[in-house]
Structure formats: C-alpha cells, structure tokens
Amino acid sequence: MIGARGWNRFWFAPGSAKDLAISRILFFTGFVAFSLLKSFHEWGTIPPFFHEYRATYLLWMGVPVPGTGVLLTVEWAWRLALVFAAIGLFTRSSCLAAALGSLFLMGLDAPEVAGRSYTAGVFVPLILGFSRCGDTFSLDNWLRQRRGHPQIRVPEEYGWPVQLVRVFLAYIFFAAGFAKIRYGGFPGWMRSGTISDAILQAAYWYSSRARPGTNLGPWLLHLHPRMGLAVAGVAQFAELLYPCALFSRQARKIVLPLMATMLIGFWLCLGPFFYLTLLAHVFWIPWSAWLGIQDRQPGAQESAAPAVAQ
Amino acid sequence: MTEKKPEDKPAADPAAAAKEGGMTPARRWLVNGLIAVVLGGHLVSLAAGHQVWPFSHYPMFAERRARTKVIHATILAGVAPDGTEFWLEGRQNLGVSLSPFLYDDPFSADARETLGMPEIQRRLGQMFRYANDQRARASTPAPPMTALRLYDATWSLNPTLSNRATPRMTRVAAWEPAVSGGQP
Image 1 (spheres, rainbow over the protein chains, first blue to last red):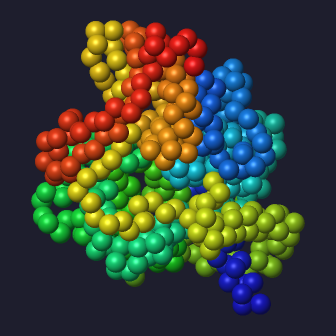
Image 2: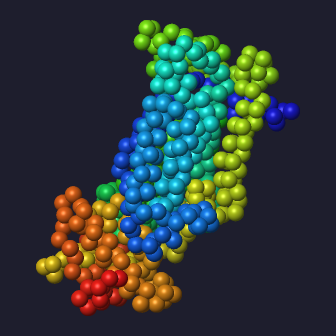
C-alpha cells in the first residue's frame, strides 16, 4: 500500500493548469520554429541507398519512403498540428497528431544514427496528447466558455504530464551518464580524453549531423591542459545527478542551469544541438508562481461567461 | 518564516480527491499505462544497451577510444565548371537533411569492400544527380557540377586547426557523366 501511495503521490500530486498550459504554448511555439527549419520532404528525392538509415521500426514494418508530394503534405499537416497544439485548438488531437507526425517524419531522418536529439519531439507531444493541457489558455477553452460550458478543473490532471516530461528528461541525461560508465568505465571515461578528442575532431570534420559553428571547443582545450578532463567531469556528473532535480529544489537550482549550459556548450563545441530536449525544460518552470497568476481553488469551475466579457 | 510556494503543497489523498471529483479510476489507469509505455520502453533500451528509436539509451560519445592524433573521413568533392574542387557540404549542395556525417558510412572503406566499386560508382552517380538538383534549387542557384569525386581524407590533429583545410587526400573514385555514362 505504501508503494501505491508513494506512486500516486509522485505522479498524481495536484498541479497547476496554468503551468501546464504555458509550458504547452512555449514548447509548441518553439517546436513550430524548429519545424520550419526542417525539410523532411527532401527524403523523397534523397538517393535511395540512404533510406536504409530510416528508423528500425519503419524497416520492421516495411514502410517505404514516400515521394516528395506525399511527404510535403504530411510535413505541412504536422506543422499545422504543432500550431494547433500551441494555440490550443483541438488540443489533445493536435498533440497526438504532432506526436505521430514527429514519429514518422523524424523516423525517416536517419534517427538511429543522428536522431537522439529528436526524441523529445515524439514523447512530449505524446504525453500532452493524453493530458488536459488545453483546459486553460487555449482556443478550446475560449470556445467552451462562449458556448456556456464550464470547465471543471481537476488539479491531479495537471501534475502528472509535467512530472512525466520531467522524468523523461531525467532519464535522457541519466542514461547518457550511465552509458559513459558502461562503455568507458568510471572514472576511466572522464580521464580517457574521449571528450577532448571528440571536440578537436569535430572542429576538423563532421562528428555529428552538423559541424560546430564556432572554434570555441579547441579554444577551451587550449586554455589549460586539463580542460578536457574538467569538461568531461562536469558533463558526466551533471548527467548522473540530473534525476536529483526530481526530488530536491536545491538540486534543481544547480542541475538544470548547468545542463542547459552543457547542451548549448555541446552545440557550440561538438555540433549536435538537442534543441527540443532543451526546449522541454520549460516544463520545469513554475510559470504561474513566477507570473503571479496561480490557479483558483482545486475543483473550481471556470466561469461560463465568455472570456471577452470578463 | 518563508512563504510556501504552490508546488510545495502536500499531495492530495487520491481517495479524497476522487470523492471531490478527481481523476476517475479509468483515467488513472490510462495515465499509468502511458507512464508504463514511455518509461518501460526506455528502461528496456537501457537494460539491453540497444536503441530502437525513439527509445534510446543515449550513448553519445560514450565509447572510450584509444587516443589518436589523426582523423580519417570520407569526403565527396564536386568539380565546378571552371575545374575548381569544393567539398560537398552545406545546404546549397546537400539540402537540409543530408550532411557529410551521413554520407561517410555509405561511401566508407568498409562499404567499398563489402559492396564493391560498381555499387559505389552507382551511388556516386545518384549523389551527383541529387547534388546538382539541390544546386539548381538553392536560393542562390549554383552552376551544375561537372564531376563528383570520392576521397579518403586524413588530418593530423592540431589544436591550432592550422591544417583544417588541407587534409591528405587520396582519390578513390569519381563520377563524370561524359566518362561514367548517362543515368546512374
């Protein structure tokens, strides 16, 4: 029983509808910007020998790479779903459509070798698709109010999506830190020079999908002979300690800014940019407390009066 | 005394919450199922040390490699109408989705040995046509390439990066429409 109670306390603690809604708006707005920079429809014309790099699940299912026309249609439908999710129109369906679109389009884009930075683009919309993230600050809610239908708020419904996104992020970083122990040993990986070599190699040629845009990495390595060791140490400890942010407010204040800095640092020094993973960090921020717009009492009904009349 | 922030509120008793119109048991089961899928899939990936995207164990830069002072890469180089060579990279030549990171493997020494040079030639021909299409479609269209060459490149790593643009290059194969034939 203690286990069940602990499970419920961890996942179903009351949350703020406004925190969830603001996080939804920010995440999907940033995702729309990301989507406009991508051209997944190019896979319709890319030489077919690259198609073997599509997601394993697509290979297992025997899903071929469609032509450019089909891909363009899917791509624009996916972008529309992202916009609808951001403004909160058909919110749940839009989130689920966005998750499916990400799963398919990003699945074409060589995800097994260069798609780890995409996973938040699948899982965050999926999680929100099962949530009531459109209960406030959404067109759905505005339309509901115009029709005179009150929105009953259930605080438990607003805690678990935020918590699940946070746990997903904690998993990503913990797994990355754990992999370094598994494949490189502890503290062997940190002391192996792997990260120094990777930074230097990335400055020469492609060690990921993109080249780093700056020479910051080699410049940092040049500052001190042990700089590579320091970067490796900070990276691995930040990754392994990230889950502490789930349980400790003090840890959160250190680990989250540190990890955000690390993600930007990796982009500048190594090339891969975990933009969507970074973007998902909006779910850590207690927006309503920061903005002074806390929810009403749990279980309260939204006014049935049209928003314009308030 | 410090004021308690909203997220410090104690968790509601689920039974009491249900009486107040909280989550229904069915809804709670649905959410528990979602949690099981999202976390379960990842934990299986972590335990197996194997990725089936989008589930991953995130082994970025985790392999411990012997330190090396050289870097090897496969480079495709286009030949402009004036005979100058340029490395095939960037949006203008490859579009948004491809990059040298992705073409390294299908043209690598391993691929050449496994697939044989006729297949590599065929791939070069397809890349030649794709890159020329991209160049024609680019926001500032570039003249079509006259040939595409495949090189093995080696750099001696130098923290000053002074030799970044001058690797040791060994030509492995080339595609020239006039020589290699028409359609790849």
